[in-house]
Length: 162
Picture 1 (cartoon, helix red, strand yellow):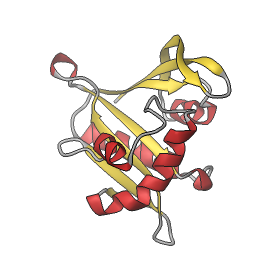
Picture 2 (cartoon, one colour):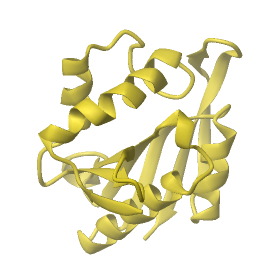
Picture 3 (cartoon, helix red, strand yellow):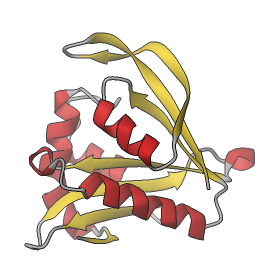
């Protein structure tokens, strides 16, 4: 699998799975009715932040990640990242490859740690993946996310030292 920096030309391939994931309303705090333009503005980050795409052996974009400083100013030594994997491509290592790449990026940029601020507690596959890469849950904001099937569920904050 190839992970490379995303370009504006990649958005038409990212948008279908991005939209599907956001519209499902199960994992992201984004409004489910985001337009393509709104999604692009949230996801395709300009440098020094970074957005990547994962390309499978057939040349298809099957996932994407965005990486950025978690907080400005006195918090700018902590990175953050978000990941989207085409739901039809789950359990094939795409998420792991994207997460590992983002950790390498953060280390190379001199960040001291990476933090995810809003991991839905019902997203057990993501939580398990992040924990396998050294992240730990540092806190959970109870009832902070309206899950369409589970109701009000918690949002984990997850952290790893780099």
